[in-house]
Amino acid sequence: MSESRLEIRNTAGEIEIPNEICCNCARTERVGSVESELKLTRYFGLGGSEYTFRWDLPYCPECEVTASRNPVNKLHIALVIGLCTVSLFLVAIIGQMAMDESLLGGNDFWLALGVSIVLVGGFYASRKPQGGQTSYYQPIRILKLRQTFTSGEVTGIVLGFTNGSYMRRFREVNLRLLGS
Image (cartoon, rainbow, N blue to C red; front, side, top):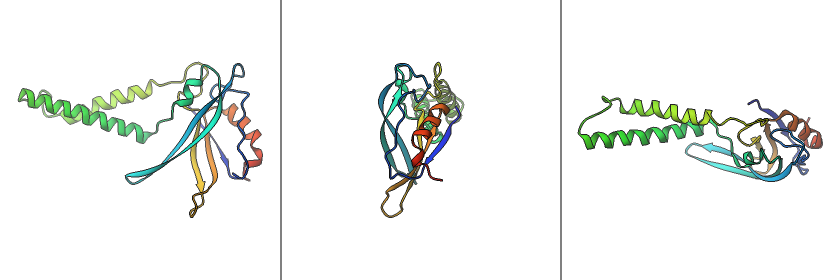
């Protein structure tokens, strides 16, 4: 999946959403508007903050399901692998305690980690776009927010698009909001 970026620097105006083509596959037939929650999470040590924008984006019936699929990142996948590893390791330890011997020759943790990487990696690798879709997940992502330090007011937004045709159309209708 390739992704193109578009930065909107002037947020004084309302962002216009082109609705004549599907934002995922660029079809023009039977396109309808679907409320989509675009999220950006910023992590600060052990905590973080999440920003959610609700936009009515155009989807064809085949791509509509992708409107609710928030994209995953490497940190998310690493956390799932960690959780799976801990779970499998605990199962191995409990089995070891019940049988009074190690069935895995003391390599319980490494085996749990290996199995977790294969299972979780395989799960996410299998999530591929169907048909003409450009993304299995939401095709428009918020990559970055620009804010004033004191008030937190949003002064700009960087969007990622998996569909180049839709990004070009989005740029055309929002040209007045793009900074130089």
